[in-house]
Image (cartoon, rainbow, N blue to C red; front, side):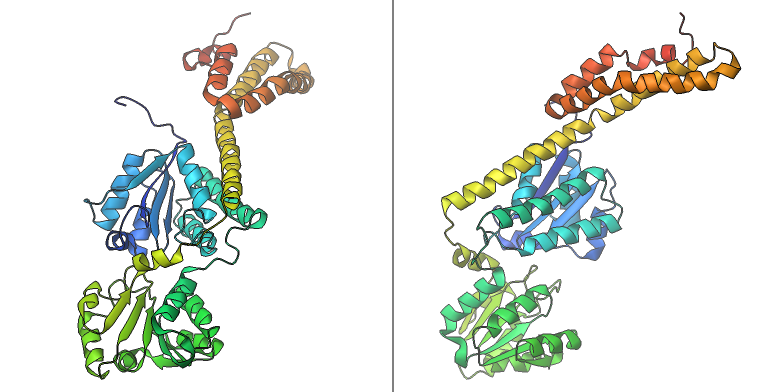
Length: 418
């Protein structure tokens, strides 16, 4: 509404996900380190940037308009429509994300590591203040609690497992297949290990870092090949699963065309689980090529989850959201409580100045003991009441204890009379 004010403690989030945007749009928000640092430099307050294979979300304290402008500027994508949530909806959303309830693969566990990474990056850039630090910390707790107290995520696939499942559908049993994994980061590691459990005839790992490729290949009983051998490997393999962190396609149309020329009409299957994409999407039109990206994998990843499991998980998210909102509301009473103590101390000091100097220390000790006992009940009720109806309780307390700004001069020792 025109003229409405944004609460200084309002938590907000804007972003894109697999629910709201196709992969071609999402990959524009797969930021490198330089853009991530710029977004986290907290120009307008606290910031937390969560980036996964299927989402990019910028959390902040303040207005969704500010966040929207920053995220679109970072992506250079003014034409993209972003999801936006604020207040309780933003809190509930992050708790749902951390619980795996908003994932392409329900209950997937990797999201907890991604939230941890987002916290670490925000903290390193000085962007993680008290509100978002508490929010992210609780999100991790909620995610763990949902997995501990419900069956969500148990026996369900991860994106690497879905990719391996698609490989089986394309090639049949993998016992006689030669499979190339391009990339040895977290996704590459999980993918290669999932392949290793299928009994695939040959798993080849290649990566720009030869040591990481060799370590992963040894762990899954495969072999490592140098990255410059990629053209030869494409000509020899039956299926490629690519998952690098490259900012542009590593399997260009021209590279795949060269590989096809040396394959004697053998079909080539490509599964791309990277964001940004590792495979040029125009490769789909080449004869003899089958390409699957994350959006294609989405239809294979939908697994039925019993309604009672989902209900139990959502109930936990709702309960934890209410608890966080109560904590947040209770913070609104802190400045008023501080001012109330300061006022009491100012009145005490003003009165002590009226008595002989040799009696002041004993009088001050007695006065402070008395103030603590007098203020403890109203302060406790103010803190508890603010958690349920923050603004109303704080407003009433400020009126009852005469804490309006224009009246402070009276009780700061500046003219209060007997």
